Image (cartoon, rainbow, N blue to C red):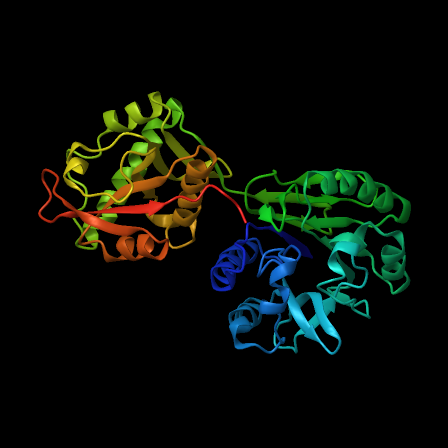
Length: 412
């Protein structure tokens, strides 16, 4: 069988956005013919104990219906992290969807002392039986407690999955503990961690799989979302993890072709946003040479690109911006190759740009979007970009909306 370990970056309390992100990542598991996909601890709300009471839910909540549909239609078991209501409080739970079967819930049995003001302990260990493999699930703190692993083994588990939300120190402990346990009991151990801000710490990913000899088979990086697919028969693993990096000149021709593909796709949809004189290969080359073009790659294939700089079009001087006389970041030439569109990659590039702005103390981000491109306008509006005025550029019949977003550099 194939087990998919998801590494996600969830947003604090943004349940619907996190659900959409989960659904996109599940598609990666489906593409790899995974039988099971497991997400990190409290992945739907992010690991935020102070929000548990507000967002705790019952397992039959209709917001989870898309997961059951994906499970039914693709014969895949899906485990997502969510706080659930219990008779005596709130559990840290893994909600598990099975194809054409009733949902099951596993709730964390051993809580860290910091969690006791917010949560209560679960009671029972569940074992998933998939294609002859018996799989136990543990959630974060308890996965480093020997008693939890031993209890799982006593119930017949031959694979152990740890769903966690761990910062650097916690991951260092995990990377010492899991190989020893895996080797001692000849049991593969898989770990799903998140990335980004959680509660009062930064989670550092590095989701991984160790085989029964305690050998590290594969791991994801510390910053990006992605999936790790482990084949229990071959004991091999592969990763699918889009990465954003500074553009390189050796990719110039490929990048320019993606911009051409984007232009053709827009025109096929009646949107004449780009002209024969924009963007040109020399413009893209200058972006690379100036170090302001970033590429999004997955398995070394270029998916899209974005220009992030302080360069503003001269036409911007005509606009009454809200954040004047401050440090401003500008976005130009965001493109996703048409064959990869509608998979959340534009969101990923924008997340990167906004994090870049936060980390470098910019007060706002500016950009322009073609007034006839409704899908793009809705995309930016949903990310809280506000229209400040219109400008016109050569060779375009219609105007461009100039949009702006405030950047808040402090983290709650």
